[in-house]
Amino acid sequence: MRKFIDPVCGKRININKAHIVIHYQGEDYYICCPQCQSEFEKNPKKYVHKTKDK
Ligand SMILES: [Zn+2]
Image (tube, rainbow, N blue to C red; front, side, top):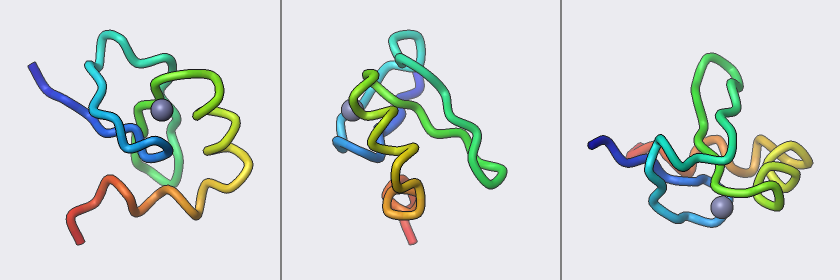
C-alpha cells in the first residue's frame, strides 16, 4: 500500500486514514489531522516542498 507524508508534521500516513486531501498547485497533499490541515492552510508555501525529494 502506498504511503504518503503529511507535509506539516512529517508523519507517514496511510492514504485510507488521511484526514483530508488538499489539492494545491496541482499536487495532492495528505493531511493526518484537523490541526495539520489548518496549519497547512495558514501557510501552504511553507509546506509544499516537504514531500518532494528535490
Ligand atoms: Zn499531521
